[in-house]
Length: 129
Image 1: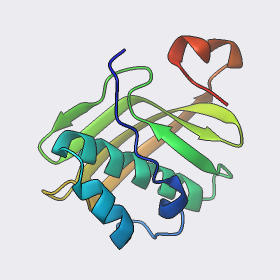
Image 2: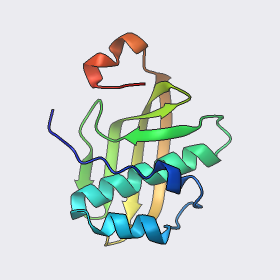
Image 3: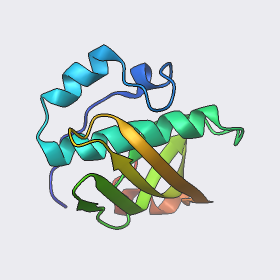
Image 4: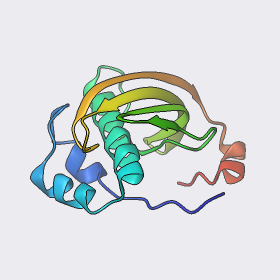
């Protein structure tokens, strides 16, 4: 599995409404290469949206590449094999995200929450408490 840079944005993103980027987060994102910035912006927006929707989930982490590599193209990221962690459990997630040209502002995000990932499968996919 390739090493990935993980930017911890969860604490900031939960207080920010969808489509808006907090100036502190924007500054952090601008330091990243464009591909990483695209993935981090989309992961953060997915976490924020799931948190604010009436699903009852309270995600504190989203990973776009757990079960299948995401597919980037220009200002779009398709993440069919993503996961998110909520209240100590991991759940399958797929999303399609469209950003602006700088890969900071998310313009559209469609997502689908899947089944809970059984705890016995966590080590295989590098998931953690």
